[in-house]
Image (cartoon, rainbow, N blue to C red; front, side, top):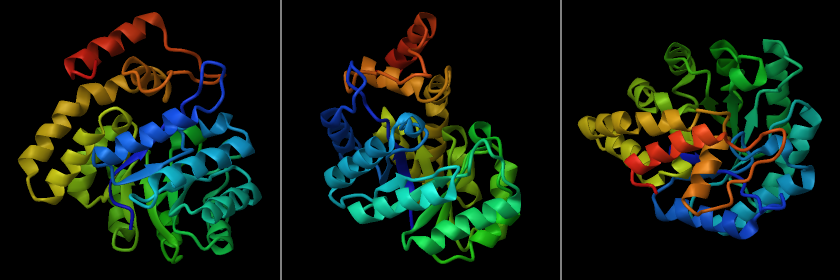
Length: 291
């Protein structure tokens, strides 16, 4: 259902820390104009953890309204409280989101049974296509392929963003339930290998700054042009690495700032990128002719 190059879009802030609505609308246009197949607001890259409820709802509304159904909007609606996840997902549906991305509950570290019950409860409460999001490096819990296979039986659970960084785990997912849900890469580094295993696309950080190239790689693969897809995969390795020289989304927002697309501001407890790393990032961006 959700395939191709999907961007985990940043939430731009003004210099005084407020949501920069105009820049966000322009970023949505930048993505659509350059071939992005879907947009995820309020994910990890969108700094959802530092948005209050009103801001969270506002960002989703802005992106939905700006996208105008030209591409699907998959709203980040996850929480470590099942009740809150339901409330945020209900709002996303109300304002017209096409789907919801729900991160595994963080900090409280539920069991696999707890994960199953959490997602099942949200799916049954809100009739909206839902994408599981497994990112153990952020949440402290790894959702196992066997749990995902159980959840794949629920009709409106349609995909998973798999960001454990393991091709082995992603391959197990595809083996167990790849015929029932779409498996999307949550790590730009492994998008091409995951496509080769049967994955459906990526929810990408790098697409914030290079949407055309990420989309082109996936389009080439889908067209059967493996050599071009492989070339683009290898070409993108260095910029993909640069997006993680500090905690995401600090590098990608810094990059967008250098490109003049938004301020580059992040919210505490995230801090601006160090001067040394900013210089490294700028050098890589110059190599890609981004600045």
